Length: 74
Image 1: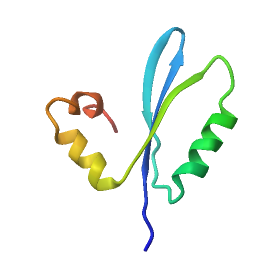
Image 2: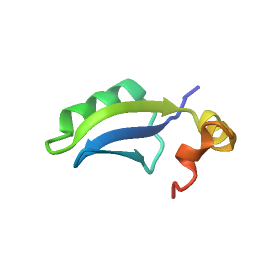
Image 3: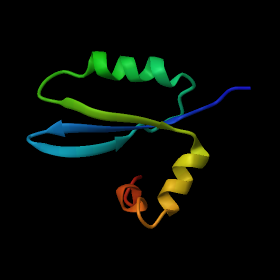
Image 4: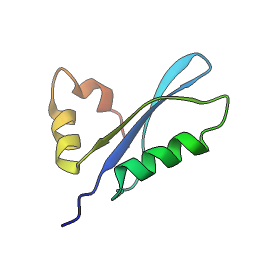
């Protein structure tokens, strides 16, 4: 059975923290995270990367304390 992940990346650019949810599902979280860190070039600085299953991701969007971070994701 395969487990797929949505990957959220927080990065610093111009002294501000930005958030990006990668637009597809990935099957290998660790490998993808390492690739993100290796391919990120200045002036961007990776601050955090989070892998969530689609169910976890959906639950976080519904959480009133945490969901504000995911409100405007397209």
